[in-house]
Amino acid sequence: MNLVRSYLPGFVPKEETDIPPAALDSLKSVGFPVWTNVTAGKQLLPVSVGRFISNVGILNEIMDAPEFRKLFPTVGAFVLLMFRNFYEEIALQNFGTMDLSADQVTWTIGTVFIAVGYLLRRERFDLGKGRANAELLEVLRMIRSHQTKKIMPKEMKNILEYLGIHVPDAESLRIFEWRAKRKGQL
Image (cartoon, rainbow, N blue to C red):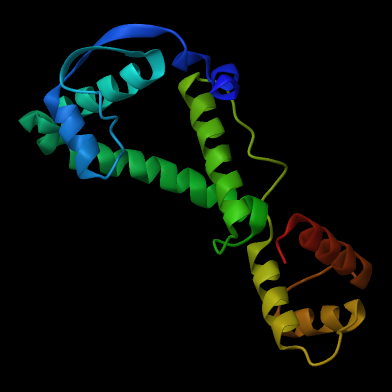
């Protein structure tokens, strides 16, 4: 308990919190372990616990409002559109694909929140040096997944030129592939 208190100081001080019955019902309905000594009404609880239960009550009140039910789909669609556009842009720019690993998804979501923070502060947010060449990455993934023996950079350059994708030279292609592998794009 002392270790928890050292990391979460909000559990140490207590304050009186008014707990609405709807908040406790909501917590119980999702299987959240509600403490046995917590009941509706005024309670002396640790600050963090009291605020958490109070926030659940506030959200219940907001969601029960008929205006919110009418407005939520429109506002939710707008917010989802904004976040989705940011997510897709950041994922394609940094990884060249939307098929991401769990770590890449987590990183991309964090970067989306950073971008939204910059947007809300009306500051400029730079997404990076430039877009990943998604087409070239996808073709390289396809070729590498079906190769029976290792294709050398000069041979790969000839294959790409045959497909209509311009690559300056074999060494540039080798470096591009090496960097893409290092970034987890290939």
